[in-house]
Length: 113
Image 1 (cartoon, rainbow, N blue to C red):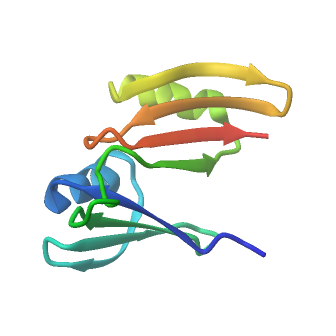
Image 2 (image 1 turned 60 degrees about the vertical axis):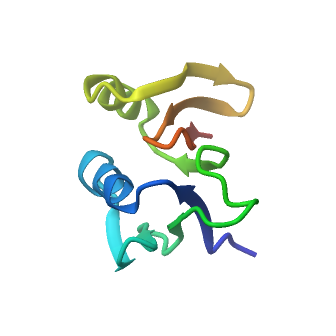
């Protein structure tokens, strides 16, 4: 089994699209007005972001994990871009990780195993 996709929720689809596309460099796959946007990764996994509508769809309460090869370089890029660092680069028994927050305060955890 492989993860196909994950969904975040947002208060502003236009703003979050600009962040993930321009700041993070993610490849835009699909956009539907101010309701939904999808980004696709090299392994064909997708991150969908939808305008929050329901009681379970609350922006800022989601986390996704992004595997990277050179985590030190990615951490430096995040610092250079002045992204909101949620957790500094840390060593773990399984590898290294750091986390940032997107404009809605959803957490993006970068990991290197």
